[in-house]
Image (cartoon, rainbow, N blue to C red; front, side, top):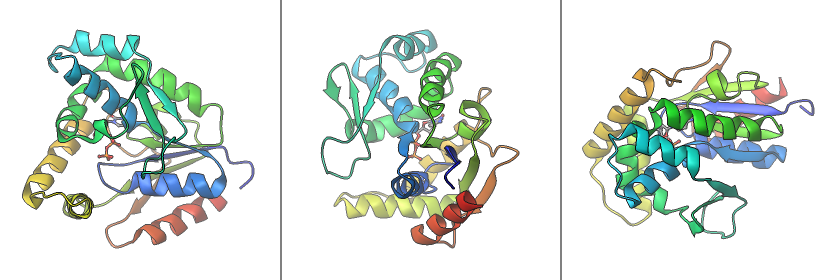
Length: 225
Ligand code: CDP
């Protein structure tokens, strides 16, 4: 396992990529990098500045011009890292429902993807990294040593998201979550640039009937192999 350096984990929304990626990185002593946070940060910025999401040029300019700082967590409040933009800690702000609803539109813009992919690739090529997203094994780091595509049915993923929200003491409607998960999947997998799909050499893990620990053990055995 000592020669391994780049682990790519891709998959649809709420398939458990972050939980798996964070645990693997911790176990291996690698950097954990969740690329979805960068797309969320640009979406949040566009909302904050009142930019129309359909204005592709303006949204892309944000991704090209505004640096997104991803740093080690400065608080123990469940975060895996700090996301700082314009001097503001926006780590939790980028989880707002409004960001959820718009992030796939922003992530489909080629200009946004180009700007963020360059940054992600630079970090990934340093090695000793577990990078999580939709296109890591296919586009960002096709040379990854291990590629995992973590999947689960839309119903199971919506059930998990619903549970997470209830556990935070908030309320949410299951059917509404399911329809949003389906909508995001549709946009992510049908876009022209870097669509969500397994790399040809990715190993698929279906987590429908596996708990987080079983997924971790399975992924770890792939890394050892
Ligand atoms: O945590 P969750 O699975 O809900 O989503 P996320 O990983 O935070 O990613 C949010 C959105 O960013 C996704 O629905 C994609 O539209 C986009 N994304 C992407 O296009 N490429 C990536 N490498 C990562 C995220």
